[in-house]
Image (tube, rainbow, N blue to C red; front, top):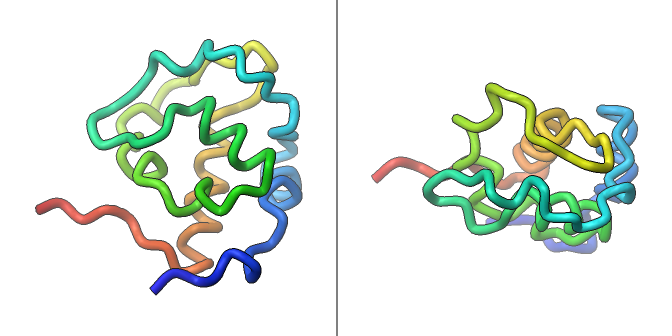
Length: 105
């Protein structure tokens, strides 16, 4: 069972502390939205914006785990965010908060 949303720390603050990346800089330009892998239910841009809004979906989505093959190279960001570092920080927080990766069927 996933924890209730009100138990979650500020996602923005967590990402900033863990990575030095301020996800509020994401302006929704969509330069990262064409990069996707099977099973992703959010684009990287949607993920950045969800984290910036402290939206719990930033931790409860399939993208955090389905995008793994894409994290071996930089993801373009016009705002200069290190998208890979942000995703890694969200993965760690998701695990700590009780969310679990997708399982292969």
